[in-house]
Amino acid sequence: MNGISKSFSKFYYYIMLNNNLLSFADGKNIKAVFFDMDGVLFDSMPYHAQAWQRALSERGLPFSLYDAYLHEGRTADSTIDEAFIRAYGHTADSRTKDEIYSAKTDYFHQYPEPPQIPAVADVLRYVRSKNRQILVVTGSAQMSLLDRLQSNFPDIFEEGKIISAFDVEHGKPHPEPYLIALRRAGVAADEAIVVENAPLGVRSAVAAGISTIAVNTGVLDSKVLADEGASIVLSDMQELKQIMQIILT
Ligand code: CA
Image 1 (tube, rainbow, N blue to C red):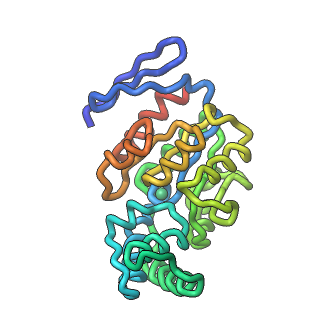
Image 2: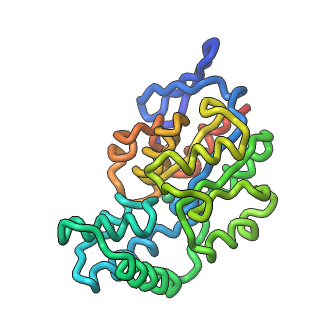
C-alpha cells in the first residue's frame, strides 16, 4: 500500500489510495455499515472452497478452488446448479442437491474453527464507537458460524441485526439480502455502506443501490471485484480501518 491521503469538499470526501482517486458521500449521512460474514468476519473461505471442491468432484463435477471464490455467496442450491449446468447442461434434482450439500457441510465441519479475519474486530469496534448500526448480511446457513458471531465479537451485533440464509427467498447476487438489511436498519441506500469480499456479494449490494467497499481477503484478481461495481477494492482490514476513520467521523 502506498498510503492514503484525503481531502473534503462540500459534499464529498476525496480519497487518494494507491494512486486511485475515490469519492465518498459525506460520512455524516452514513447511519449503518453492513458486513458480509465469510471472508469478511471469519477466514472461512479456504475451508468452504475445499469442502465444495471435494463434495462436487466426488460426483464427477469439476470445480476449482478459484471457482469456489468466484461463486462465493451463492446459495448452496445455486452453486450446485452452476456446477451441474457446466458439466451436463442442466440443473440438479433436489435429492442430489441435498446429498451434495450434506457432504459439503460434513467436510466443512471436519476443518478447525475458522479464525477471525485479522483486524476486522478493530474495524467493528471503531464503527460501533462512532454510533453507526452494524448489520451482518450473509448467505450462510452454517449455524456453527452464525452462533459464533456473538461470542467472537461481543457487544457488536444487536438482536435482529443478523440477516442470514434463513431470512431471504433470493440469495446473493439478488439484491434482496441487502434490501432487507436496509429495512431492518431503517435507513436509505445512500445512508449505508457495505463491506464485501466476493464478486456476487458486491453485485448484490450494488444492485441494492449501496456504496460497496470490497476487501480482497481471498485469491481473486482484484479487477473481478472492481468490475462488479465496488467503489474501492482494499487488500486488508488495516486499510479498511483507515478508510472508516476518514469516512465515519
Ligand atoms: Ca463473503
